[in-house]
Length: 168
Length: 177
Picture: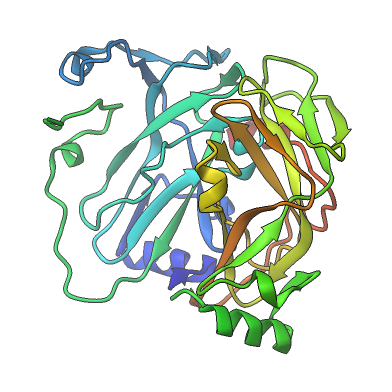
């Protein structure tokens, strides 16, 4: 079951969903619109280990032009999480209509700790992004079964974070 | 909880799901196949700034199809008008469409409950790919909601044909940014 706007609002108030800062005006019928964070890094290497060292820069107030064929890692402005339901993350329709991906095929969060989520940005045509722009939506899903919590490497990070896994 | 095919047919019969035109042959075990409408829009500008209303050009898909260029975003639409006040629709490509490297949406798969439109599709081809109007291009699933429902009353309500991004409206209230 996907949570309705009223149910998301209720659970934020009850503390079982974390969205911080939280603004009720950003609630949609069954989702919450989140903002782009302040920092970004550009993937510079095809080597997963070397990519961990990519420089993180601030997105200027005048905007930053993203180029097609590149992958950028940014993050949500908000700290997001839930120890009760599953969060999925997607782009806003208005952003998708500009050809900007905010995640690449990995839209499912883990039940567990709250942090700023890393966004995987890539674009079809050159597109400008601005810090704190409304860029995506979160949905919240009920689970069935006993809960076990995420304790992986990404939960410690609240900045754009590249690959941490040994892939091979 | 996701609706099964028979439940989609039942809820369509009860009027809680609108799919117009509706064809039972397009029902799958837990989704409905929708068709590509006749019009596609492209942006005139190469560089897209979400703060600025972007001019577009409309193209009618010719009888012999339209080849999509991988360097552009194309806004297309479903032939069907779809929506529900009770279930949340989520759109997907069809597996056969995806196997051609064609995205039907760019990360935004959630349709708001209470939104009734020909839905705008965000087409992106990894390699050049030819599309035809009326082709079965994607699938929609319907999901149950937990909690009191409030319906969509947003900017794209009632849209017929593809609608370009209105992201510039998000920047109209500077205090909100």
